[in-house]
Length: 328
Image 1 (tube, rainbow, N blue to C red):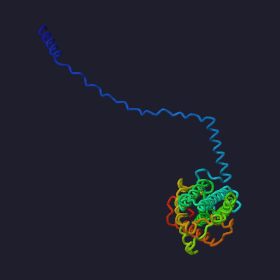
Image 2 (cartoon, rainbow, N blue to C red):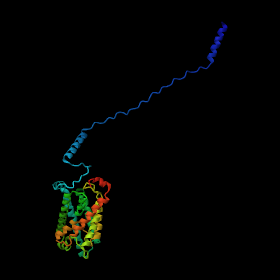
Image 3 (cartoon, one colour):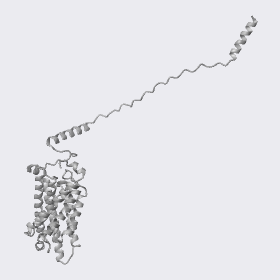
Image 4 (cartoon, one colour):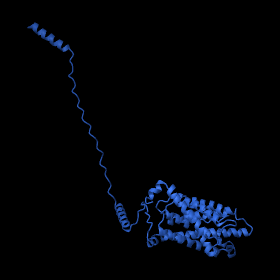
């Protein structure tokens, strides 16, 4: 028994001396990550003021639709054969603007010629003569175009209006009204100048009427006026950004048009008087009764204006202008 007890004790000691291995760790199960949802956005309730503004906007849009009034961003569609009554009703302010602007332009132009002649007869020179006249006409036209561009487009010239009418940039009866107002403005402007200037000085140069210089034949004068008017109307078409909105034009278009008139006057004044504008020539002719070769100042500007407008419209019109006028 003792021996067996001793053997059991030894076996227990040997088993206790052996290193004890720890049980293998249990695999850790990873929990799937839950997607974090963004917090719900809370929209503020519209205020009473915003609701009123929205309702007012809807009501104004419905009223515009009933009255056929285009919105601010909408392109104005051109109705070429709009009735004369509608033209007068909708565009009387534009026609009045053409009358007033042409009147002021002719008053400034003829007054400049009378003042120059007065200074010349008194022995003065009034600047550089030809240069001062050219600058005066160019600046006067540019100023008047800036004045009424947003009302009527600032034509101030039957040759410009007829040219734009033929390429359908202005309605037929509106163009007729423009030409009538321009002619009337030229007459009134000349009469106003005659009323405030000394009679003897004004009558000496036929109220500033345009006439052919000595040695210039009617054919030569007509050819020169065609060229000068072509330059003017081509500049108008190229810089005014004609896009269906008749009152829309480039910011510096009046300056470019004024420069064209300035250079044209430096070329044409010594030979034809550089009219380029039937209304500018017709007013002094009516007031003074001086009609010598007056037909030149109607035929030549009309031909030059039509050629310039048609040439620019069909050969040099940009893609943006073509998209704005799909009916062309």
